[in-house]
Image 1 (cartoon, protein in one colour):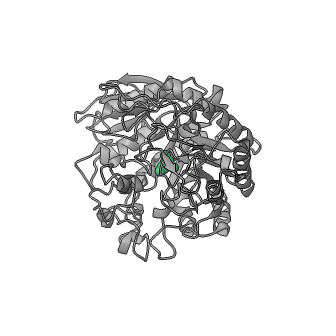
Image 2 (image 1 turned 120 degrees about the horizontal axis):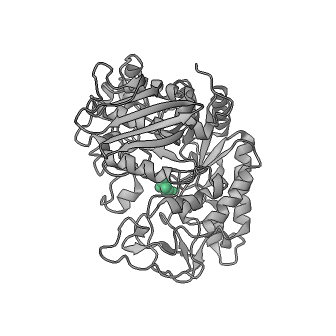
Image 3 (image 1 turned 90 degrees about the vertical axis):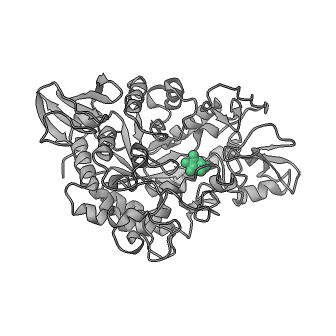
Length: 527
Ligand code: BGC
């Protein structure tokens, strides 16, 4: 193993591995992954060279939105195990040098949370003000479809929900709620948790005067803060969001070396918006989760554009990069949309080289290290995602990127002895972790080599970045630290390219050719 330098900051210089626990490894045979499954796979995870694991929510929940509807913040849902399993997971992860990041859903709870069942029971219940109530709805639309207001049968008032009606928004203006959140944070940090991924940060607060959102004018930018034909001027990116994050920063800082990472969304985001969430010199969020490359087809030009935008942030706002997540189509299936399986040629590896050599924290979504593709063509009966179901399947399902991890070529790809909650991708016979561990040319072994190179090379994990060429289909940048300079060349085109510089090739898609082949890449250490 390489030696990490003293100033190697885990959340900044290391790589984060995202696990959707439902789909990672099932040890009970109920078809759903669990915490014991993650524990079982810790050696595998450590072998990737990553520094931390971000786990999607596993707290007690009716699972209407698969854990993003929490009914008890202090309990592991029995589907995933129990609190002892969580403690063991933290201990075992730490033994292997892995940090643990929990997913904290603070914008809303489940409608089954006792706070809400109390709150809705009467207008004078002490918990009433823990949620957002109004006697009549305004025009705000829910992100998951339909009005964002639901009439409460007990009191006749309406409660606000940015997402599903089963996910009522907490009233974060209420100091008691904020105190409770701090308590939850302290509880998990005491337990040894190393950081939090904050869900849906943009939607924390709403306009106090309940003004209607304006309609989206024809021809205006659809992606800009919009939902169902309206611009979310009054219930998105509210200025109080920043002050709650400042409070969370303060509580997080009570414990050393902890991370807060915010899901800040993509709509209408630019450098100015990100900066506000970072605060001055990362004093608010440590990391803003980068959505730029999570959507749409991944042609060459997008990488350079994203890189320039994030490099234009001041140097003290440390960027993050992700290509896939539990909400989007897997990157490998967007870069090669017409191809569903092996071989990927270089293109999957090209993505990985970008991710691991830019200035910022890379996030790897489970299975990405294997080139696991999106599951396409799930039938209506197979689809589980409430966002899609509630919209009569007109919204594409998020299930295609949430299918079970492909461990080996046994039944259900070694994920479960029972019947998996989502089907296993049919390519698992060829693409699986066990087979790739045996194959030096595999995506998995490539990921390991790349992460090892990154971890062991200060220029790559902490160095400055200088863009040299950005031609859309050809991207070249230098990384510089401690007197060392590395040159990264990424060829997103189908034509060969040459590199003009002198130095030593440290990684290359094909060392036998003179230039850089189609969809090829090279990393050089310059003289
Ligand atoms: C999560 C989604 C979830 C939503 C509501 C997000 O942005 O990533 O998976 O459905 O928040 O909690």
